[in-house]
Image 1 (tube, rainbow, N blue to C red):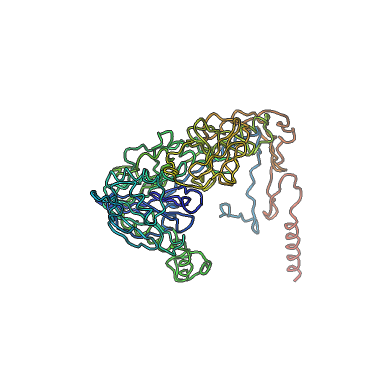
Image 2 (image 1 turned 90 degrees about the vertical axis):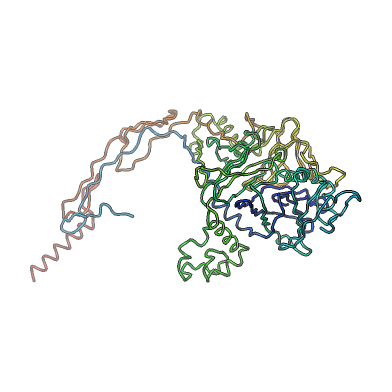
Length: 618
């Protein structure tokens, strides 16, 4: 599969594989007066000969390659910091332990006080031209960039351009022309790329394009040809000012909805998708706004001296890219050295960096995200999000209504499931699932966190890849939806569940329909744990204080229900004797119940007297 800014043609058209779906787009933009440089991350899995990539740009670009690792370095340094703390709802005892103050007893010889109290530590330009009209495709240039064979062209008719691409060895779908048309009308140029003969998948690198433009822009319309639901688009924008989306809302995350499910999975990706949908499907979130970041690799103390005193040389990992002892390790770690160099070069060249993200489904791809300068905006660095999730995990056995608690706990699995605006999140015997409304079906996809998710999508896709008689393999072959029907939706197996059934994500390529157990009131992607506050829980017994302490009643804001055993015995509330110091050479302390000196003190005392006696005789 391929992921890129632009159109990636489904290899299924000719290779027999399933249709390609894009999960995420990442673009690094450099914005200078009158110019934009775009570094575009491309991911692809399939046969090398099936790789085809087309992107529209406002002007003829300069082409080069960029290191893949730069994207990971920038992503790690600018990713939002999302923390969900646990609020313990378990009752507390009204009793707590009390202890006597310990006296300061002498520890040195001759009763001296110890003062350590505070210690510790493409081919022809007029291919397909009508005799009396302009050619449908005008080739501007052809060049080999790395292992890419590229052609930059202008088109005056999208359908003919699509056919011209196929005639020249670019694997594109007939439907692609529909999405090329707006860019043809806007007089954009197109860059098409395929791998040179003999190149493998490992030869696919990010493509760098520098072109004249006033603003950075993502050609999202063309992406709708093969995008996943809730596809993530992240732009890292470098310049001398911070940026914002042009003409579209910036959303804020409701931190009260942040939560984890019982497996520990965080629901930030789902809450983000839901917030954008609620904003009309065209919202964005600013996840970083501040100074350009630098690579943190090589900043540890292990890299600050001339020698390998941490013994990291030859361990197969690049910790110190500038050190001689780590050069071989760093050379073997892909293009990491080039990535570090690019990140630091961007930081030297620009004074501001903005990370802007959206999640958008194919049916919502009705615009091309464009970004403009946001003069005077506050630079807050990494976006900090804090959630608090109530929990009764520590006292689950003491919950009085265990069945109701089990149901409430089960619904929490819907925290990390977002069924879209057309679906309802429910639970099944195997976990959270989606009941899809009329005109929608369930589709499984890989979410932003790399795990499988399920959501509801329109039964009829925005883009029909079988238009004009295009042949795709049957995606439902050898696929079972369980209690539902498998439908082939553009080469992707989706499920239409029977009544009373819901679709849950699986480890396979398609969801599975299972019986509905519990129903929530919405599409999911929210914290369901607040319902735990209403549960009655038995109060715990008083704590154990040991032989040196006793119980005192301090009260509590979470008393719980008295189910017995919450009151202490009378002897547990009786203070033991206070500890005292020995007055024999100031050595040792007597605790409660102690009536003799410590053994070592007696032995020392006897030894001392014998020593005195011998000296007297002498």
